[in-house]
Image (cartoon, rainbow, N blue to C red; front, side, top):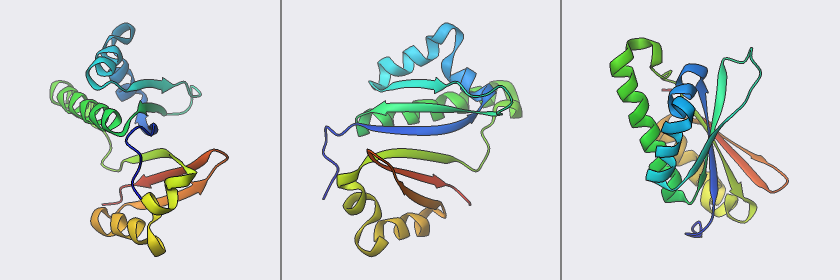
Length: 144
């Protein structure tokens, strides 16, 4: 079973505050450009002041989310070149996806956990699947 082409997904990416502000841009200009170029919706979730991380949420169809994640990665790489090490993302990266219940087994977990095992083997990432009321949250953190 494959994810239906019109199934919306949401990806959450933890970013240090400085990187989140770069993604937003002055008066939201950069976020607006990313929305126009990718077709995905994105916003930064407001967190407590003492939390060093903010959550960037990207929502849309798979292609839109993938395009937006690529644009964000390119933006942060460009900023790292301009500003030096102060804006470089940490090498360990974590992401979360919200997935419909009907596709979590066949598309994410796989028969006997084969998809999750494949992701772990190929990337070295720690993968967790947590059931929620409307679906499941798939989280991974790169460990390599």
